[in-house]
Length: 372
Image (cartoon, rainbow, N blue to C red):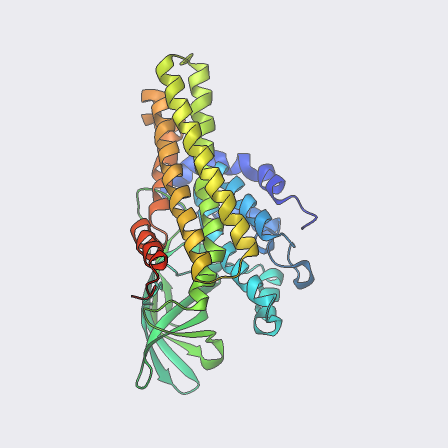
């Protein structure tokens, strides 16, 4: 484990982040100041091994760090989680095949690079078009939900190549956001998580060298890289939503106490809220433990994805109960619960979404092909 208490490091900056959250939300402005402070403290390299120049945090420590950050500023936490889960996946690979990713991890740590995930665009089917040219590929695509992209350095992305022999093949590669043909579009005008800067990215004939392609997989089929992605990403991302629910709970209880709202009805509501949080915490602890110890694969993906559904569902319900506990004052923006309610809605949308998870889980239980 790291010698740094990363959750304590978040607490040291958290009050400033919380104080800025409402303004960023109202203005739809990216949390650039927060990113700058986190970079200065080495948070973007927290999960990279110390021998590679990083902070040496364990996987569980990284998850707890994002959960803690979610209590202060939802948007900062969610944007950072997208970078952090990519780093976690690279570290997992480094422990098994150092040569493949060591140089890039050293760059991420040494140059304080910010990685941008395009998983929302690139799930089983991938997106975009790759055309073979001399020395590599020309890529054309539009990637959505690029959280943190105003401060980003590399997209970790992909495109589909229509292989004349193997058929549609998804290529995975990093792409510099400064490369010719790459543009960030001003598209992130949304209900919640307004300050994540999750703009679309247009890729218009950008060149990707052959050497940059790290994975080739059949379109629409599960692949070890996708199982690794689920395993590393979901506990990190859903720690953010658990943190939001915990922040909403504390805010609601504090307001109920201040206003003397201690009648029987309020006690029932608070009890319901506590039950939902307890359920989310239990499911989340299982997610983190499995991701930190199990080998990625169909069964691990199943257990992690079930946890994702349970944590997301209970986090949503806990925030709803927090609004009931606080009463009509929860409608006022300056209270803060209204923003947390909007932000936690994003828990619905990360893959595997609930119905997709249930289908996957059902097929696995019945012994059916998960690609069916």
